[in-house]
Amino acid sequence: MEQSYLDNLVGVFGHPVAENPTCVMQDAAFQHLGIRWKYLTIEVLPEDLGKAITGMRAMNMRGINLTIPHKVAVIEHLDEVAPDAAIMGAVNTVRRDGARLIGENTDGKGFLRSLTEDAGLDPAGKKVMVLGAGGASRAICVELANAGVQRIDLVNRSAGRADALLELLRRNTEVDVRFHKWDSTVGVPGDADILVNATSIGLFPEVTALPDVDMQTIREGLVVCDVIPNPPQTSFLQRAGERGAVTLDGLGMLVYQGAIGFKMWTGLDAPVDVMRQALQNVFG
Ligand code: NDP
Image (cartoon, rainbow, N blue to C red; front, side, top):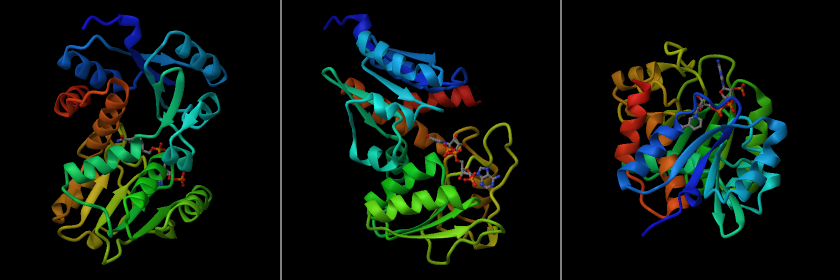
């Protein structure tokens, strides 16, 4: 079927956004499926976000991703926000339903899909320790709680962000959540099934940085996940793997959150292997 090129524009708004790698994986997916879609990387200043969303509506763009600093601020410009994104208070993907713009958050969903498809693990009933209480942690904790995990041990350096996350989990979900202030080396509880590094520790170029975790408490069979997509094999995952843990990298989360957005926009199943390979080529 012949399609109008301009009907099939998507992209990302951010500031700064030049280094954002998402265009590479989305365009690779469009090309692989032979569809005439294009992903644009667009620098938008915070004070221009409302105008950018108006422009996106006027240009009939099919959807948009939001990255720093727009994930929270975008909400007031949308017609509707999906329930899980409303709980998180953050939107990373906007999709269209006719003229209506709907806010979604695919970060936590991408993490869950990586957990179930790449690690073969159903999180229901599991006990999870999560390091960090920022945006990535928030998305992951809400989706883990919605997926029926039994307990979340939340570890964070500062109490402020952790308190806000604890409160929203207690108010909106059934999960048993406990806070541990991260002011010295933290140990993984003996009954934990999953450990998630949801901090930015280890992100390129700080590739040798390690979260302050007692590695002796990482035992064989524990599933250890990192949200860091670049480098995919972080020093932390490497060490956890040496202790016999099952490791899951942040590249999977990044690919699947994009794949879920791709499906929301195009209605098609995303070619996840093509998207992963495209990102791997960028990250080297
Ligand atoms: P935020 O800035 O919102 O949160 C960062 C978190 O890391 C906070 O909890 C912060 O603690 C903690 N932190 C940072 N440095 C340290 C340190 N030295 N010691 C202890 N704690 C530390 O960032 P995001 O949550 O948005 O992003 C976190 C990471 O997740 C980034 O590396 C990002 O690339 C990655 N990410 C990956 C995605 C994927 O698809 N794979 C998707 C989204 C994000 P405190 O509150 O005390 O400051």
